[in-house]
View 1 (cartoon, rainbow, N blue to C red):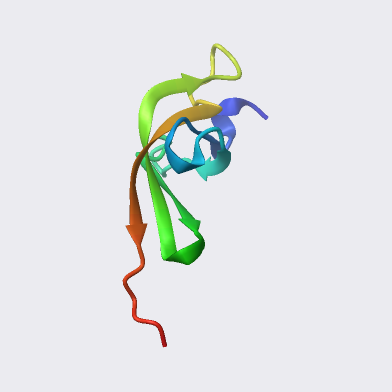
View 2 (view 1 turned 180 degrees about the vertical axis):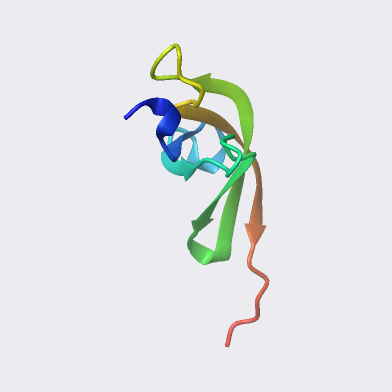
Length: 83
């Protein structure tokens, strides 16, 4: 299977509370990497990371990256009242 036919890639978290972690992310329907990834954490938190220009390709002729760098953007907190 060529890299251009894959449906996901590795999101590399380069800083922030999850620095050094990686996760699988799905490409958008357009074939582009996601502009942001959101990672749920304990305590009702969601970490939001934004895509940077850093990309890695498994093959020189691949049109889709195998890995994309993301930088920490913000943390969202769940404001829902507890039942």
